[in-house]
Image (cartoon, rainbow over all chains, first blue to last red; front, top):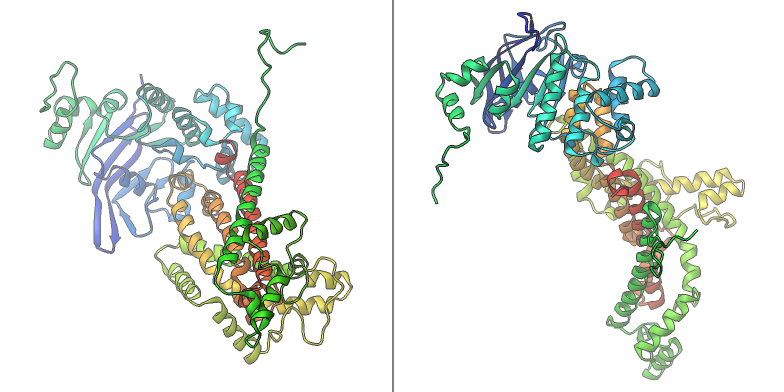
Length: 276
Length: 354
């Protein structure tokens, strides 16, 4: 269904993050490798606090000033090495080369500005010239593309007037407005109900399957990984403990953590082992 | 055309106004009720506090019969309920009573003194807001780094100094040592005379009278008291701005704004609009508390305003003056809060659409 190639979209080698705190230096991420081919969805799975989000934020250089990100390589196809770029210039990458979809869509949108304004600010930030009218037309098209029935009304409204699913669609529209080649979604469906989750994931994976795009999907839901990803990276305590094609990892998990993780997924018809 | 489809069923009318109009109407109703409460409370408090105004007016050498005569003249011998009804009746006609000492209507005195105090606290709040928010924003943005430490040092120092003491300090340094500011002798110099009253605000009245030199002098006289109050309250603003902006800068919407590649000044603006309602509310609260709260600073600068006037009234047990002050301060506070509700409703779509 997807044109997977051997061409790399993102290649990260030995990414580590250290954060200076008053109680000493902590290392939430210790040497993570991540390879994303063009047209591929790579899942990062692991428990809370295992360093999934920190890895992503480190790549985008969005960690607080007291943290340091190092890597042997963090090559983004069509741009260059992300960590070799001065932080000042990372702005060109964010939004334009790498689209980002966060969890909790309500939190992601500005509560005070109208949705239209948020599309305008995004385009103004990346293009030299864009008129309000052009921006609105593009925004209407983007909202239509993510399946919003009445885009004009959404544009003239505020974030709090949207439902969770609608708000996440708006966030996806914002993240893809500038057609980034790589999309990073950090638990994009946490907090949404199951049917909306499926719609949102179908929507993002649809975006990826347009030619040559790729995605990193951070989640703790193995079901999501199995359904949407081609390859998976299992993280535990700041390290990659296992990686490979989804089929291999799911059927024959090698690392004890992955084995326990897969065993913990409830199966239909299974008796629950609950003491009364 | 008949609106009622079912005979006998009353036509439903829109019962409530909507949106901003409804907000204003609700607030106005509350305003009137609250003012009534403030007046009643102030009357009772002033009436039951210990101390006999008549004896104080008569002086220590007066005989009991003299005191009784004064008491009778002021109506203090009547039962409290009768006095309350009298007072409320007068209030409805705009009569706040007469000062025991100056024998002039309290309402007239308030109107005379109010502009001097208003110009002082409005300018002080504006100065405090601008300086305080700037310092707070810098501290929040550079949290934990050098600019934050410097900003917090200044904030701490100005918060710790009492305003009247800072006033004395400024008088000593800026007037006595440097000679940059005029003597702290009130709104204008000793040798100057007030311009014909139009608005009651001396700098504006001087300009209307075509005397720019006098207007300049009035502004110079304003500088130190405004600086005194402004610096102290700038520290409060800085503290609030640092906390609320700091929270906004760590919010998810700001993270997402950065992840979209928005420039830092836009990101800062995104954080500011999220926290502005809190800061505007704070400005309103400070404005209300300054009204009367700056009495000692007025005293220090010989400022002929409401605060100094009320302070004198309290010390002399001039009951109508004290009641007048409570009433005007209460009313202005309530009006400020009402305006605040409306402004906050306009600034935050989450409120006006709710």
